[in-house]
Length: 97
Image 1 (tube, rainbow, N blue to C red):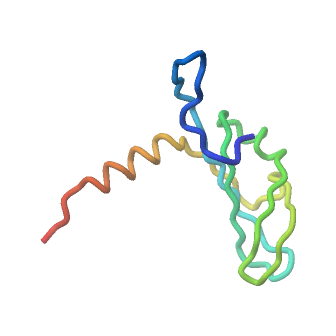
Image 2 (cartoon, helix red, strand yellow):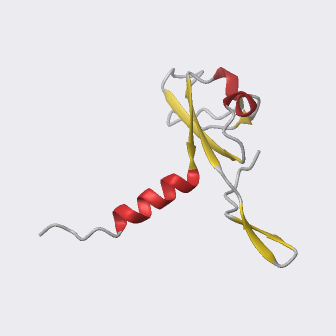
């Protein structure tokens, strides 16, 4: 599981693009029952593999701890490259006067 985005990996002097997926988890805080989110990066989009990860979210109420991905209320996965390209394209649009 990747926790830091590594868009390019060197391989014998050649730069190879790796596919990355952002796994977004929504948890219920054990202390205040509010929403707590966490994200991790993985080279696979498989939900079940990411559900095995132990995440360390922090809630606005001050609670901090470890939660397994399978304990999440919801779990989404998105291609990180697709999101980055979309954000870049939207930022290049001219502002309306």
